[in-house]
Amino acid sequence: MSHNSFATTTRGLKRDLPPMRLYEKAKKLGIWNPSELDFSKDRADWENMSAPEQDLIWRLCGMFVSGEEAVTLDLLPLIAVIAAEGRIEEEMYLTTFLFEEAKHTDFFQRFLDEVAGSPPDLSRYHDDNYRFIFYDALPAALQNLRQDSSPSAQIRASVTYNMVVEGVLAETGYHAFFSMLERNNLMPGLRKGISLLKQDESRHIAYGIYLLSRLVAVEPGLWDELQTAMNTLLPAAIGVIGDTFAAYEIVPFGLVEEDFINFAMDQFSKRSERLEKARGASLAEINHATQAIIESGDS
Image (cartoon, rainbow, N blue to C red; front, side):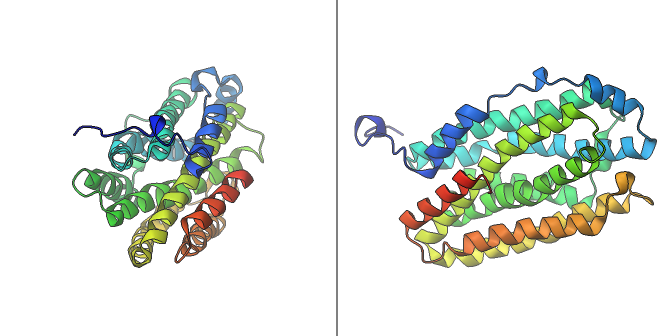
């Protein structure tokens, strides 16, 4: 496939588009190095933890590190589809996704290597609901874009990746880490890394809201496709949380399952409400709404 023209030598870059605003934030905030985090106190804290507390940290890290690896492996088709549509501003921002997901994989692996070690096979913490999402639904939705680049296929991919994997599961996982560690003043290196990672992921979610809103604004009939994808994956996402709590007779760190189910449902509902507003909206309105999300930092 040959090129007929280039944006940079015809219209220029549209720097007011939300993806370019996100790109600016990624260049400024996304360059952090997992190997520079100080895990010295984390190692001391780890040695003083009970076996169930260590097991819960292994479980969460085992889900996170594989989840980060999964999106690193499966992300390229989405970037390719956006590039093929000539959306250079979106593609430029999406180049930071792959770098950041790889960096997150590196971060969790470094924590395991340098602090917690790990049991022989962390995949023993991957229950059926987790496997459904990360072993099946995520690669299926993203890899399908190689054959089907239609708006409906893009919706299924972005819902799976941005709205459910990042917007429900990852955000609930961050909430768990902070609930466990911050209130007990434990593991400052792990907490610092997760705060930086959360900042990266908030930009990813903001882009997902933009992409899905843009698609639904252009084709309002796609709302049903979006809602079906969200509702199909939600039970498994909530199931991942339930499986985690069901693994412990007494849950370490005093965590309460209901708190995390409610947190996950609140995140899901917030994103659903934002996306529903895209039905019948103009692209200018989508850009304005997404920019408000970017400026507030509340994706």
